[in-house]
Image 1 (spheres, one colour):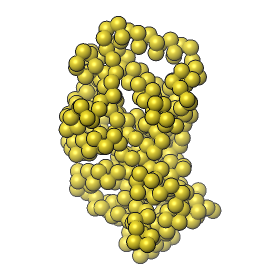
Image 2 (tube, helix red, strand yellow; image 1 turned 90 degrees about the vertical axis):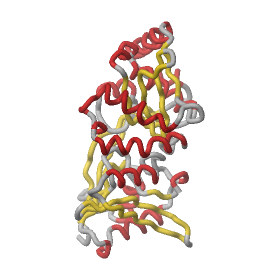
Image 3 (cartoon, rainbow, N blue to C red; image 1 turned 180 degrees about the vertical axis):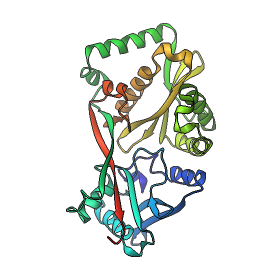
Length: 305
């Protein structure tokens, strides 16, 4: 069903949900499903946290109900069930929703006049709307940005430093969590949500299978045969989504962010995808690459009100 949907193939995967429930003892799985003629038609992967039913984690940038594209009947039927007085919980919070998400679409169908009340904006996700070629995309960026990018590439090439996408057929999937965490924590130390033991356990549980299935794509910067920087992209239905990364202190001189993002955009274009998505946050570097942005927010309902 996920493969037929418009949902993110990592954030909405069963692995992501199960791993989050495993590492968070404060939540209980509360998965709602809809069937049509005995066949699964919609899944709302929620958890019960106290008296609130919601999506389960802090590391997912986009949450949603999983249905086949444009199956509005399944979307609305499942939301009706989630909002019914017999549901057994007083509050439903659907967080980190894109404005084109299945949850938003079904809410607009069911409660078009009341949608302003339960909906609240959260943050902005900058992204690159891709064209037919990398050169076409670069032509839309400033001259100073293009110059700095060329300089970074030339400097790296002169020193035999290059970016390669890690291939699950040649790079052991079970090694990816430790490689990523080492570089990420080297870069961010305690300033990242991934510094906690439960978050690191989540990474170790979910990354190997997502990487093996190419729902997670990893781009690595190599000095000779040593990985000194990494960026991880989660696969959207029609996008690559830059989720996180890291690098060694000595790798800063190569401008690793520029090189890794450039490689990710090139790969997204080669895959004929529509977007390279920077996900949540308004960090300054994103504005130099992005040519569009979307808002995400949440719906909150008092059940029976």
